[in-house]
Length: 411
Image (cartoon, rainbow, N blue to C red; front, side, top):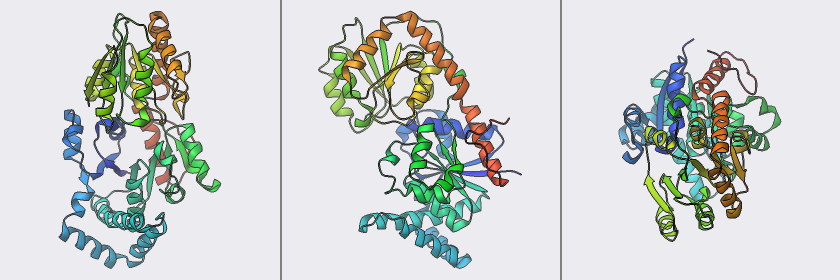
Protein backbone atom coordinates (compact mmCIF):
# COMPACT_ATOMS: atom_id res chain seq x y z
CA UNK A 1 0.00 0.00 0.00
CA UNK A 2 1.50 3.32 -1.10
CA UNK A 3 0.85 6.11 1.36
CA UNK A 4 0.69 9.66 0.08
CA UNK A 5 0.78 12.16 2.93
CA UNK A 6 -0.24 15.80 2.57
CA UNK A 7 1.92 17.68 5.08
CA UNK A 8 0.50 20.97 6.35
CA UNK A 9 2.02 23.76 8.45
CA UNK A 10 1.22 27.43 8.90
CA UNK A 11 4.41 28.43 7.08
CA UNK A 12 6.77 26.10 5.25
CA UNK A 13 9.70 26.08 4.89
CA UNK A 14 10.68 28.36 7.75
CA UNK A 15 14.19 29.07 9.05
CA UNK A 16 13.05 28.48 12.63
CA UNK A 17 11.45 25.09 11.84
CA UNK A 18 14.18 23.29 9.90
CA UNK A 19 13.40 20.10 11.84
CA UNK A 20 10.15 19.80 9.87
CA UNK A 21 12.17 19.87 6.66
CA UNK A 22 14.40 17.11 7.98
CA UNK A 23 11.36 15.06 8.96
CA UNK A 24 9.80 15.43 5.50
CA UNK A 25 13.05 14.38 3.82
CA UNK A 26 13.43 11.38 6.15
CA UNK A 27 9.84 10.24 5.57
CA UNK A 28 10.50 10.32 1.84
CA UNK A 29 13.63 8.25 2.43
CA UNK A 30 11.41 5.71 4.21
CA UNK A 31 9.27 5.32 1.10
CA UNK A 32 6.32 7.62 1.83
CA UNK A 33 5.13 10.12 -0.74
CA UNK A 34 4.98 13.48 1.05
CA UNK A 35 3.40 16.56 -0.55
CA UNK A 36 4.01 19.73 1.45
CA UNK A 37 1.32 22.35 2.01
CA UNK A 38 1.52 25.68 3.78
CA UNK A 39 -1.19 28.13 4.77
CA UNK A 40 1.03 31.13 4.01
CA UNK A 41 4.08 31.58 1.80
CA UNK A 42 7.19 32.23 3.86
CA UNK A 43 9.23 35.35 3.23
CA UNK A 44 12.53 35.08 1.40
CA UNK A 45 14.39 35.73 4.66
CA UNK A 46 13.44 32.17 5.62
CA UNK A 47 14.94 30.71 2.44
CA UNK A 48 18.45 30.72 3.82
CA UNK A 49 19.71 27.83 1.71
CA UNK A 50 19.06 25.92 -1.49
CA UNK A 51 17.08 23.29 0.44
CA UNK A 52 14.55 25.89 1.59
CA UNK A 53 14.23 27.40 -1.88
CA UNK A 54 13.52 24.02 -3.44
CA UNK A 55 10.94 23.12 -0.81
CA UNK A 56 9.23 26.52 -1.14
CA UNK A 57 8.94 26.08 -4.91
CA UNK A 58 7.28 22.68 -4.50
CA UNK A 59 4.83 23.58 -1.74
CA UNK A 60 1.10 24.24 -2.21
CA UNK A 61 0.07 27.55 -0.60
CA UNK A 62 -3.49 27.48 0.68
CA UNK A 63 -3.97 31.20 1.18
CA UNK A 64 -2.76 32.08 -2.30
CA UNK A 65 -5.22 29.62 -3.83
CA UNK A 66 -7.99 30.94 -1.57
CA UNK A 67 -7.41 34.48 -2.82
CA UNK A 68 -8.22 33.48 -6.41
CA UNK A 69 -11.96 34.29 -6.66
CA UNK A 70 -12.85 31.83 -9.41
CA UNK A 71 -10.93 29.01 -7.77
CA UNK A 72 -12.48 29.72 -4.38
CA UNK A 73 -16.04 29.94 -5.73
CA UNK A 74 -15.76 26.79 -7.82
CA UNK A 75 -14.19 24.94 -4.90
CA UNK A 76 -17.05 25.65 -2.52
CA UNK A 77 -19.72 24.98 -5.14
CA UNK A 78 -18.01 21.69 -5.92
CA UNK A 79 -17.82 20.73 -2.23
CA UNK A 80 -21.45 21.60 -1.70
CA UNK A 81 -22.67 19.74 -4.79
CA UNK A 82 -20.51 16.66 -4.20
CA UNK A 83 -21.50 16.10 -0.58
CA UNK A 84 -23.80 18.68 1.02
CA UNK A 85 -23.97 16.66 4.26
CA UNK A 86 -20.20 16.79 4.72
CA UNK A 87 -20.13 20.45 3.73
CA UNK A 88 -22.62 21.55 6.36
CA UNK A 89 -21.17 19.20 9.01
CA UNK A 90 -17.80 20.87 8.49
CA UNK A 91 -19.37 24.32 8.69
CA UNK A 92 -21.14 23.30 11.90
CA UNK A 93 -17.82 22.02 13.29
CA UNK A 94 -16.15 25.34 12.48
CA UNK A 95 -18.81 27.21 14.41
CA UNK A 96 -18.87 24.68 17.23
CA UNK A 97 -15.13 25.01 17.85
CA UNK A 98 -15.18 28.79 17.97
CA UNK A 99 -14.18 30.14 21.40
CA UNK A 100 -16.98 32.70 21.07
CA UNK A 101 -17.11 36.33 20.11
CA UNK A 102 -17.46 38.01 16.73
CA UNK A 103 -13.79 38.11 15.73
CA UNK A 104 -12.92 34.50 16.71
CA UNK A 105 -16.03 33.23 14.95
CA UNK A 106 -15.08 35.18 11.84
CA UNK A 107 -11.68 33.52 11.93
CA UNK A 108 -13.33 30.11 12.21
CA UNK A 109 -15.29 30.87 9.04
CA UNK A 110 -12.05 31.88 7.32
CA UNK A 111 -10.51 28.57 8.39
CA UNK A 112 -13.53 26.80 6.91
CA UNK A 113 -13.11 28.68 3.62
CA UNK A 114 -9.42 27.70 3.52
CA UNK A 115 -10.22 24.11 4.52
CA UNK A 116 -12.34 23.62 1.41
CA UNK A 117 -9.43 24.76 -0.77
CA UNK A 118 -7.08 22.40 1.07
CA UNK A 119 -9.58 19.52 0.84
CA UNK A 120 -9.81 19.98 -2.91
CA UNK A 121 -6.03 19.98 -3.24
CA UNK A 122 -5.39 16.88 -1.12
CA UNK A 123 -8.01 14.95 -3.06
CA UNK A 124 -6.62 16.18 -6.37
CA UNK A 125 -3.14 14.90 -5.54
CA UNK A 126 -4.54 11.60 -4.29
CA UNK A 127 -3.47 12.02 -0.67
CA UNK A 128 -4.45 9.17 1.64
CA UNK A 129 -3.71 11.07 4.85
CA UNK A 130 -3.35 14.68 6.03
CA UNK A 131 -0.79 15.51 8.71
CA UNK A 132 -0.32 18.86 10.45
CA UNK A 133 2.52 20.36 12.47
CA UNK A 134 1.69 22.88 15.22
CA UNK A 135 -1.80 22.39 16.65
CA UNK A 136 -3.17 25.91 16.35
CA UNK A 137 -4.86 27.59 13.36
CA UNK A 138 -3.34 25.37 10.66
CA UNK A 139 -4.53 22.33 12.60
CA UNK A 140 -8.04 23.79 12.69
CA UNK A 141 -7.86 24.01 8.89
CA UNK A 142 -6.63 20.41 8.74
CA UNK A 143 -9.44 19.19 11.00
CA UNK A 144 -12.07 20.93 8.86
CA UNK A 145 -10.46 19.73 5.61
CA UNK A 146 -10.61 16.19 6.95
CA UNK A 147 -14.30 16.61 7.73
CA UNK A 148 -14.92 17.98 4.22
CA UNK A 149 -12.93 15.34 2.35
CA UNK A 150 -13.23 12.24 4.51
CA UNK A 151 -9.44 11.90 4.45
CA UNK A 152 -8.12 11.10 7.95
CA UNK A 153 -5.82 13.58 9.64
CA UNK A 154 -3.28 13.58 12.43
CA UNK A 155 -1.03 16.19 13.95
CA UNK A 156 2.24 16.71 15.75
CA UNK A 157 1.80 18.43 19.10
CA UNK A 158 4.67 20.62 20.25
CA UNK A 159 3.89 23.33 22.76
CA UNK A 160 4.44 25.38 24.70
CA UNK A 161 2.05 28.07 23.47
CA UNK A 162 -0.80 25.68 22.64
CA UNK A 163 -0.86 24.70 26.33
CA UNK A 164 -1.44 28.32 27.33
CA UNK A 165 -4.76 28.35 25.44
CA UNK A 166 -5.92 24.75 24.95
CA UNK A 167 -9.58 25.73 25.15
CA UNK A 168 -9.15 28.60 22.68
CA UNK A 169 -7.67 26.14 20.16
CA UNK A 170 -10.03 23.28 21.10
CA UNK A 171 -7.24 20.81 21.66
CA UNK A 172 -9.83 18.38 23.03
CA UNK A 173 -11.82 18.30 19.79
CA UNK A 174 -8.69 18.03 17.64
CA UNK A 175 -7.44 15.04 19.63
CA UNK A 176 -10.88 13.42 19.54
CA UNK A 177 -11.15 13.65 15.75
CA UNK A 178 -7.53 12.90 14.84
CA UNK A 179 -6.49 9.43 13.73
CA UNK A 180 -3.52 9.85 16.06
CA UNK A 181 -1.39 12.53 17.71
CA UNK A 182 2.39 12.61 17.61
CA UNK A 183 3.65 14.17 20.87
CA UNK A 184 7.25 15.36 20.96
CA UNK A 185 7.90 14.37 24.59
CA UNK A 186 6.46 12.64 27.64
CA UNK A 187 5.67 16.08 29.04
CA UNK A 188 3.84 17.04 25.85
CA UNK A 189 1.84 13.81 25.96
CA UNK A 190 0.88 14.45 29.58
CA UNK A 191 -0.52 17.85 28.60
CA UNK A 192 -2.52 16.25 25.79
CA UNK A 193 -3.88 13.76 28.32
CA UNK A 194 -4.85 16.61 30.64
CA UNK A 195 -6.95 18.23 27.89
CA UNK A 196 -8.61 15.14 26.41
CA UNK A 197 -10.85 12.28 27.50
CA UNK A 198 -9.14 9.10 28.69
CA UNK A 199 -10.73 7.09 25.86
CA UNK A 200 -8.42 8.88 23.39
CA UNK A 201 -5.15 8.49 25.28
CA UNK A 202 -4.16 5.32 23.42
CA UNK A 203 -3.71 7.35 20.22
CA UNK A 204 -1.27 9.77 21.85
CA UNK A 205 2.19 8.62 20.76
CA UNK A 206 5.70 9.93 21.38
CA UNK A 207 7.80 10.84 18.35
CA UNK A 208 10.78 13.04 19.10
CA UNK A 209 11.92 15.81 16.83
CA UNK A 210 15.34 14.87 15.58
CA UNK A 211 18.57 15.87 13.88
CA UNK A 212 21.11 14.17 11.65
CA UNK A 213 24.14 13.66 13.93
CA UNK A 214 26.44 13.19 10.93
CA UNK A 215 25.76 16.79 9.97
CA UNK A 216 27.26 17.93 13.26
CA UNK A 217 30.26 15.59 13.51
CA UNK A 218 32.60 17.31 15.96
CA UNK A 219 36.17 18.25 15.20
CA UNK A 220 39.05 18.55 17.71
CA UNK A 221 39.31 22.07 19.06
CA UNK A 222 40.74 24.11 21.90
CA UNK A 223 37.95 25.07 24.28
CA UNK A 224 37.53 28.72 25.21
CA UNK A 225 34.79 31.14 26.25
CA UNK A 226 32.63 31.49 23.12
CA UNK A 227 28.89 31.15 23.80
CA UNK A 228 26.11 30.68 21.28
CA UNK A 229 22.36 31.32 21.43
CA UNK A 230 20.08 30.17 18.59
CA UNK A 231 16.38 31.03 18.67
CA UNK A 232 13.65 33.55 18.11
CA UNK A 233 14.34 36.97 19.59
CA UNK A 234 11.21 37.08 21.72
CA UNK A 235 10.48 37.43 25.43
CA UNK A 236 9.85 33.72 25.94
CA UNK A 237 13.50 32.92 25.16
CA UNK A 238 14.81 34.76 28.24
CA UNK A 239 17.77 36.59 26.68
CA UNK A 240 17.60 39.51 29.17
CA UNK A 241 18.28 36.98 31.92
CA UNK A 242 21.41 35.85 30.08
CA UNK A 243 22.53 39.46 29.64
CA UNK A 244 21.97 40.05 33.35
CA UNK A 245 24.01 36.93 34.13
CA UNK A 246 26.87 38.10 31.90
CA UNK A 247 27.24 41.33 33.88
CA UNK A 248 28.72 39.45 36.80
CA UNK A 249 30.91 37.01 34.86
CA UNK A 250 34.63 37.53 35.25
CA UNK A 251 35.76 35.52 32.24
CA UNK A 252 38.36 36.88 29.86
CA UNK A 253 37.36 37.09 26.21
CA UNK A 254 33.78 36.03 26.98
CA UNK A 255 31.63 36.47 23.87
CA UNK A 256 28.13 35.60 22.73
CA UNK A 257 26.90 34.98 19.18
CA UNK A 258 23.12 35.32 18.75
CA UNK A 259 21.53 33.57 15.76
CA UNK A 260 17.90 34.38 15.00
CA UNK A 261 15.54 37.29 14.67
CA UNK A 262 12.23 38.41 16.09
CA UNK A 263 10.12 41.20 17.54
CA UNK A 264 12.47 42.01 20.43
CA UNK A 265 15.66 42.42 18.43
CA UNK A 266 15.94 46.21 18.66
CA UNK A 267 15.34 46.24 22.42
CA UNK A 268 17.81 43.40 22.94
CA UNK A 269 20.48 45.15 20.87
CA UNK A 270 20.12 48.24 23.06
CA UNK A 271 20.40 46.13 26.19
CA UNK A 272 23.44 44.25 24.86
CA UNK A 273 25.20 47.55 24.08
CA UNK A 274 25.41 48.24 27.84
CA UNK A 275 27.46 45.10 28.50
CA UNK A 276 31.26 44.92 28.54
CA UNK A 277 31.32 41.70 26.50
CA UNK A 278 31.32 41.08 22.74
CA UNK A 279 27.77 40.27 21.61
CA UNK A 280 27.11 39.65 17.92
CA UNK A 281 23.56 39.64 16.51
CA UNK A 282 23.85 37.49 13.40
CA UNK A 283 20.23 37.22 12.22
CA UNK A 284 18.92 34.05 10.59
CA UNK A 285 21.44 31.47 9.45
CA UNK A 286 21.05 28.30 7.38
CA UNK A 287 21.36 24.80 8.84
CA UNK A 288 24.86 24.53 7.38
CA UNK A 289 25.90 27.86 8.88
CA UNK A 290 24.58 26.88 12.31
CA UNK A 291 26.46 23.60 12.06
CA UNK A 292 29.64 25.53 11.28
CA UNK A 293 29.10 27.85 14.26
CA UNK A 294 28.65 24.86 16.56
CA UNK A 295 32.10 23.60 15.56
CA UNK A 296 33.55 26.83 16.95
CA UNK A 297 31.46 27.48 20.05
CA UNK A 298 32.17 26.31 23.58
CA UNK A 299 28.72 26.50 25.12
CA UNK A 300 25.14 26.61 23.81
CA UNK A 301 22.96 28.69 26.13
CA UNK A 302 19.15 28.69 26.02
CA UNK A 303 17.64 30.54 29.02
CA UNK A 304 13.99 30.05 27.97
CA UNK A 305 10.86 30.45 30.09
CA UNK A 306 8.80 28.03 27.98
CA UNK A 307 9.80 25.41 25.42
CA UNK A 308 8.87 22.09 23.90
CA UNK A 309 12.10 20.15 23.40
CA UNK A 310 14.34 22.62 21.52
CA UNK A 311 15.94 21.17 18.40
CA UNK A 312 18.87 23.55 18.75
CA UNK A 313 19.83 21.70 21.94
CA UNK A 314 19.91 18.47 19.93
CA UNK A 315 22.09 20.11 17.29
CA UNK A 316 24.54 21.38 19.89
CA UNK A 317 24.68 18.04 21.68
CA UNK A 318 25.25 16.23 18.38
CA UNK A 319 28.22 18.57 17.83
CA UNK A 320 29.55 17.64 21.31
CA UNK A 321 28.88 21.14 22.61
CA UNK A 322 27.81 21.24 26.27
CA UNK A 323 24.45 22.92 26.79
CA UNK A 324 23.12 25.19 29.49
CA UNK A 325 19.37 25.62 29.63
CA UNK A 326 16.36 25.77 31.93
CA UNK A 327 14.67 22.96 33.82
CA UNK A 328 11.27 23.22 32.10
CA UNK A 329 8.78 21.11 30.11
CA UNK A 330 10.39 18.29 28.11
CA UNK A 331 13.98 19.57 28.29
CA UNK A 332 15.05 17.19 31.11
CA UNK A 333 14.04 14.30 28.82
CA UNK A 334 16.87 15.41 26.51
CA UNK A 335 19.45 17.05 28.77
CA UNK A 336 20.63 15.10 31.80
CA UNK A 337 21.80 17.57 34.44
CA UNK A 338 25.50 17.26 35.16
CA UNK A 339 25.96 14.64 32.43
CA UNK A 340 25.30 16.28 29.05
CA UNK A 341 24.86 19.84 30.31
CA UNK A 342 23.46 21.87 33.17
CA UNK A 343 19.86 22.81 33.97
CA UNK A 344 18.99 25.93 35.95
CA UNK A 345 15.71 27.45 37.18
CA UNK A 346 14.15 29.78 34.58
CA UNK A 347 14.63 33.47 35.30
CA UNK A 348 17.53 32.94 37.73
CA UNK A 349 20.42 35.09 36.46
CA UNK A 350 22.79 34.09 39.30
CA UNK A 351 22.25 30.37 38.72
CA UNK A 352 22.81 30.95 35.01
CA UNK A 353 26.03 32.87 35.66
CA UNK A 354 27.35 30.22 38.07
CA UNK A 355 26.55 27.39 35.64
CA UNK A 356 28.16 29.23 32.72
CA UNK A 357 31.34 29.79 34.71
CA UNK A 358 31.35 26.18 35.90
CA UNK A 359 31.28 24.82 32.35
CA UNK A 360 33.64 27.31 30.71
CA UNK A 361 36.28 27.02 33.44
CA UNK A 362 36.43 23.23 33.24
CA UNK A 363 37.32 22.25 29.63
CA UNK A 364 37.74 18.57 30.48
CA UNK A 365 34.26 18.35 32.02
CA UNK A 366 32.84 20.35 29.11
CA UNK A 367 34.29 17.82 26.67
CA UNK A 368 32.89 14.96 28.73
CA UNK A 369 29.42 16.59 28.67
CA UNK A 370 29.72 17.05 24.93
CA UNK A 371 30.43 13.35 24.35
CA UNK A 372 27.51 12.33 26.59
CA UNK A 373 25.21 14.71 24.74
CA UNK A 374 26.08 13.29 21.34
CA UNK A 375 25.48 9.77 22.63
CA UNK A 376 22.00 10.77 23.85
CA UNK A 377 21.09 12.31 20.49
CA UNK A 378 22.33 9.26 18.59
CA UNK A 379 20.24 6.99 20.83
CA UNK A 380 16.93 8.88 20.97
CA UNK A 381 16.82 11.98 18.77
CA UNK A 382 17.96 11.20 15.22
CA UNK A 383 15.69 12.45 12.45
CA UNK A 384 15.97 9.26 10.40
CA UNK A 385 14.96 6.97 13.28
CA UNK A 386 12.19 9.23 14.54
CA UNK A 387 10.81 9.53 11.00
CA UNK A 388 10.78 5.71 10.88
CA UNK A 389 8.63 5.72 14.03
CA UNK A 390 6.28 8.27 12.46
CA UNK A 391 6.14 6.30 9.22
CA UNK A 392 5.16 3.28 11.31
CA UNK A 393 2.25 5.29 12.75
CA UNK A 394 1.01 6.28 9.29
CA UNK A 395 1.21 2.67 8.09
CA UNK A 396 -0.28 1.08 11.20
CA UNK A 397 -3.28 3.39 11.40
CA UNK A 398 -3.92 2.97 7.66
CA UNK A 399 -4.15 -0.77 8.39
CA UNK A 400 -6.44 -0.30 11.38
CA UNK A 401 -3.78 -1.03 14.01
CA UNK A 402 -2.91 0.97 17.13
CA UNK A 403 0.86 0.95 17.82
CA UNK A 404 2.60 1.31 21.18
CA UNK A 405 2.96 4.68 22.90
CA UNK A 406 6.55 4.84 21.62
CA UNK A 407 6.33 3.14 18.21
CA UNK A 408 8.99 0.84 16.85
CA UNK A 409 11.42 2.32 14.34
CA UNK A 410 10.88 -0.16 11.55
CA UNK A 411 13.28 -0.11 8.56
